[in-house]
Image 1 (cartoon, rainbow over the protein chains, first blue to last red):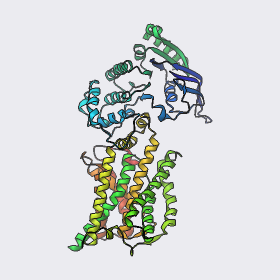
Image 2 (image 1 turned 45 degrees about the horizontal axis):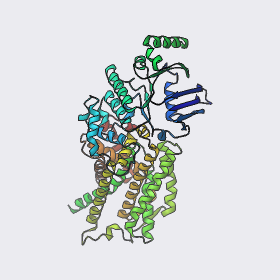
Image 3 (image 1 turned 90 degrees about the vertical axis):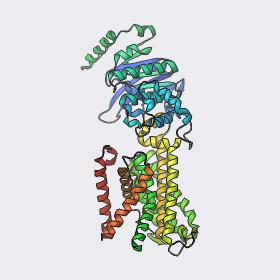
Image 4 (image 1 turned 135 degrees about the vertical axis):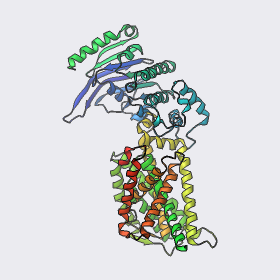
Length: 257
Length: 294
């Protein structure tokens, strides 16, 4: 279980550009939940993810994983149990390392990065198998530098790499936003498959309302640092894209855009 | 003819010794994408430590690892200043370099020679071989051994992580690794190699000067960029090989210019021109890299 309790977040405190996002924000994500977060720009979706991962500091409040307080844990230590895929496909892979080297690097998460060979030949076949599932032909490009792959291929790799080792939480930060519709569809299906197969508690920020409706078992809509809609289980299943869009338009009009 | 061959051997020796420095720059600049000016201080640091130790009668072979340790400490300082105190990379290096200037003066003064003492080139038994051939064999062996060691290291898990940090530090963080630590490690290795180069230069020239570090970072940068630019279409050529070749080519250019009658005072202009030419020439290739502007 992941909990955000009474989070207070102010951007640029003390400066002229000071902006208060969260006054008293709380959110609880239960185990095995696949939560989609939607909302307009600046509503605080990505900030929630950044606060969970420790990428940005908070003024007050607490972050808990399984009841354990991780509020003061440095970012890299939190990633022991969290996996994260970013919007920009370039952020999830090392462009100058080969596909094989990237997979090996990710596969070694949580283990010691010692002076033994970086590439485990015994695992190569396993990587090839995992990559072939993607249907993007990556299994034949093991020795190619990742920088020469397309955005979709890189994002698929990033997703695969993130979930290669056991994690409790998967954080998806608009991970299909930079992809063309067809590739986005492939990545989204893959995400769903991995989340269900591996029983990973997932939080997905998306601007694609259809994905939010079609996938996952809970949906949250954010507006100006607050939650305006929170539906899960059967209530979420009954939610249609029209309803969601209606609400979305309503808050957008209030906002003036 | 013999003078020509001597000249070639001399240049090759220089190129081989300075290749050690180029390795260091290769690690910081090319792998970590960190413009590390510590080099201008850690290079004479290695030489200062070597000069004083040899004058005190310590075994010259021991000065190699000792110089490396001192260089490593210099790298550690820059790393800590950058990572823990959050000072910008370039400035962190400048701070350490500036401090090292005084430290070097404290260690060995402004000049010191070790002409009357034995150095490693005298001590390795090689029969009646002349000193220049001895130097050539020893420097080539050392440079190649270090190259092999580095190439092997880059293939380990640890080395992969180092390359990963330079490539995408963010990814390394999501692997639950503190990427600052890895950066510090890279700076330590790099400056240890640079100090080793200083140690070898001191033994080869049998002298140390506190100003010998001026422009060494630019030299290393030029050598690495020359090497990488030449071999960029040959992916099987390793970066370390490119660094060695770049170092030798650079020394050849300088030697050639001197033979053509260039004044020693104008050498730095030549270095600057060489760096500019190779940077401009390099970006005309198929791959443009923004990092070159850093």
